[in-house]
Length: 340
Image (cartoon, rainbow, N blue to C red; front, side, top):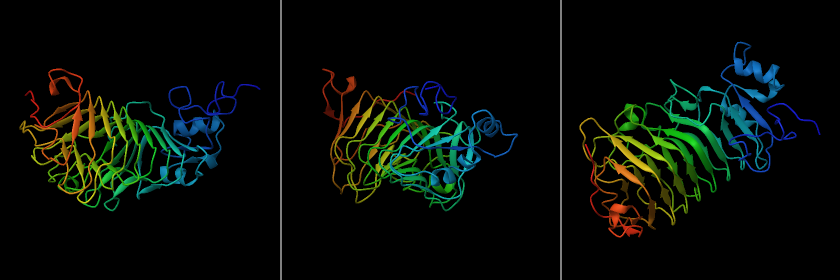
C-alpha cells in the first residue's frame, strides 16, 4: 500500500494521526471535519487544506458548531480546529459519543481569545455553558474554552455530564466579566451527575487576569450533580483571583455531592490578589449532601489557609507537611502556611 500525505498519515495508510504521534484517539479515527477562521484564499490554513492536503470544501467549516454537527456518534469522528479565536453564538451540545476535538496550535493553551492558539469562546450574554458534553468517551486536546458573557446566566466554559471523557492540554476560563464574577454559581468547569471517571491531564482551569470573583462559596471547579465518581485531575493548575474570604477553588452546589474516588494528583491551587488576603478554604461543601473522601497526592495550595473548613468533607492527603512520618494519607484539617 503506498504512503499518503497528511492528514491521511505519512505511514498510517489512510488513518489520520493526531496528538502525541501515537494516535491517542484509539484505533484510527472516523471522518475529520476541519475548522478555519475564514474560507478565503488569504487564509493560509484554508488554502493549505484545500490546495496542498486535498481536503474538500465540504469538510471545512468556519464554526466549531457546524463542524461538530457534521459528525456521527460512535465512530471516532474528529473536529480539527486550526489556530484562531472562534466566537460561538450558542452552546455547543456535544452529545455524540466517541467524538473528539483537537486544536492544531500545539499544547500551550494559556492564551485568551485576544491571544489565541485555538480558543473556542462566547461573549454572548445568554450562553450558560460554551460546550456541554453528554456524549461518553469524548476526548479534547490542545484547546482553550472560555465564557466571557457579561451576565450572571453565563455560568461556565465547560460542562462534563457523561462518563469517561478525557482532556489533555485544555485550558478553561469562566468568570471573565463583572456579572460572572459576582455570581456564586459561576465557575470555569462544571461536573454534572453523569461526569463519572473524567480525566484532566496537564490542564489549566480558571484565570487570574480578567476579573476578581466575589461570589460567596463559589468555585473555579463546581460539582453540580449527584455523586459523580472516580474522576482524576493530574498535573493541573487551578487558578483564581479573589479577595473574598469565602471564595473557594472547588465548590459543591447545595443539594448535590461528590462521589467516591476523586483524585487530585500533583495539582496546584493558586489564588492571587493584590492585598495578599488569605481565603478560607480550597474545598467548599454545604453541610447537606452525600460525601466520599477526596484524595490529594503531592498537591500544593497558595492563597487559602485550609484545605476545607467543613467537617462533611474528608480531604485525604499524603503531602509531607501533613504527617511527620510522611506518605500516609490523613484527613486535612490544619492550617496551611502561605508565603508572602
